[in-house]
Image (cartoon, rainbow, N blue to C red; front, side):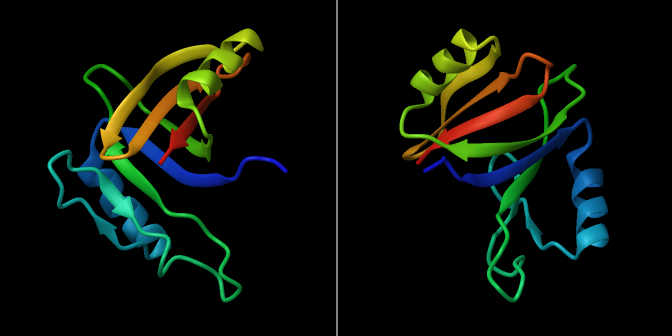
Length: 121
């Protein structure tokens, strides 16, 4: 059985503008009332009648970084997943990094440069 996609992320240079755009575009309720200003899109309220859908986040990237759109795959070990990506021809971008209590993430690029996230928590 494969690993599930559990989170999406959109980062850019102006998180407030991105929050406004995606809230208007898709009727998403975006809650950025946290110390990082990370705009959380809860899964609840953003699913089909059959319960299909995932939650995600919209944020400002690091200074000088243009941003990315990606998804996060749940893994049991972020370091092992990042090491495997490197062995398969990908490149580690960041991590493992603890982002909340009990939540660890990492980012890598595939051999063609696409950003993919892995998450444990």
